[in-house]
Image (cartoon, rainbow, N blue to C red):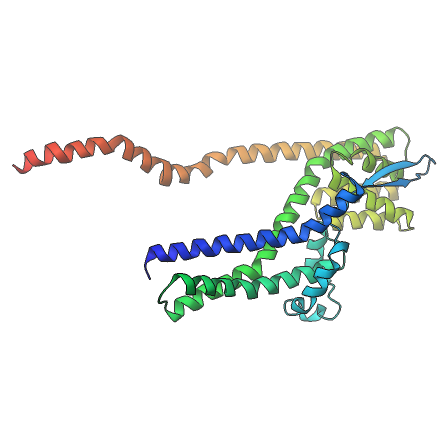
Length: 330
């Protein structure tokens, strides 16, 4: 088997694997999108009555709702038992750090572990089968060790693909929260200085930031629901920090809990924390800008400079080869 045929087979397998992953993502998201179209472009409007008595309209976004995927979870549950840890195999509900990753990605339904582990098992089984069909169709003769290596690589790629997708979803969601969190702190500071309580300020910020920061608005709205359900303020705020998994939100929760416990002013503390977040974001942007020169070094040395030298010195070398070398040899 030549190297060109191997490159061709690997390219075909990568294309087929990417198509399968995109199809799986489409099947997962399409019922949610239909649900979103039914309840509106932004979300369902829920009326809240804060302490002041005035009804507040809060938009709750069901972007990560998995209620309409019960049929998929039912189909994948037998396969999920092959990948789920042994201590959580009976209830199919994780109590480990993976459960926190589901919360950070926005998956709060009980169907999320079944779909996640079922997808891991299904991809780990289907990817080697697809690779085997590609190798059989494209290669006349292939060594057994090469075949086993390709199949093992395909199985590993299929098994760890849901982990990579979940990690990217967590990072994207956390980045969206971090970018909009200083604005939420400023709005909350204004509401508290205007005379509202912490509960009413959180509900107000959740209402005002529905269109600009839907993810953060949803998290704040869940805090409001927990408070209205009778949960303590400290527990509701700690659950907010657990769902987001962001250090800045954890610091914000600590500030509110300490201010509530010791009776200190919340407005000044929130303003200082907001300024610190903006300063940190500016420093991170400056750090990323300073790393550009180092990151461009390797592409310049290995990609751009050889091509540039070939373009500049190529004609001269051809001229030397055609004119100077024959004269020296003669």
